[in-house]
Image 1 (spheres, each protein chain N blue to C red):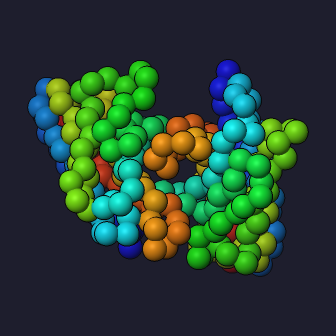
Image 2: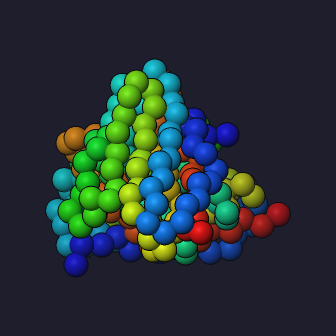
Length: 120
Length: 110
């Protein structure tokens, strides 16, 4: 089955760290860009970060640059998001997302999401 | 404040048609493809339309997309109760070098 499964969410104090993981299956993982998108409770979708199919390029939203790091392991079909210096406004459901290399930028596969709660 | 502007809500009776607008600028919608996503309550988003007007396999032709200049539109014909969801537009912003989404539109079937 083609799917993305996130893990690693939870409750953390402000200033703390958390590492999210996303396991891919059912498709050729190394052929896709991978992104993280988050959604605060009751709010809309917000892009967080992306990583190129071979892992050689990454980019981040201004709100997380310098605090979050995206990485991938194409041998294990996983993508991770290391989150440091967490703030209360980082509280959200974090989705792992697959983006095809060709055509317009679109997320054609989403994970089920993992909840991150940052307490004050 | 989202980079792309959508109406917060639209509503219509079953069987009727609705459209959802997505307004952007010269750095995003005007020069890049637009995608649309449907998010049913309590679930992850799902790709509905890509490359402005293309439907992925399995998406009924009741859903359509179009783009003109710096704006895009999602159309839903023959509205059904199962269409009640939040709908988001998204694209790449060449100035921000970031993926951008609209704030979302809640569709209510009366």
